[in-house]
Image (cartoon, rainbow, N blue to C red; front, side, top):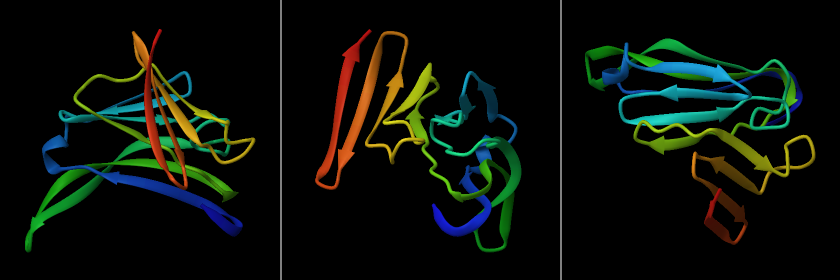
Length: 143
């Protein structure tokens, strides 16, 4: 996100009402991991990673979802806030299932230029996803 002046930037992932009360959040070692019954959201949060400003926060907020007119259910919202910045880049890796990655890194780091690849580290391998204006490539490398 690029703006002419500094302001708060917020990325929100609105979840289904069936995840209310069963969505968890763990923030450790520069990675926020939100788990739901169906998938995992892995959000790198240190300065040289996916949220490019100091003081970034990841929270689970209360929200609502309306599956049909006149009906609404409580539903959690994953909120990522980059405070008081003119430029912010957000990256989120959404993984089906309940397995969370160990680390998510960008290449090059955001403090250098905009990233062109993301590496997702697991116990036994690294998935590297790279992209250009011409397409994307996925590579799996054993550890």
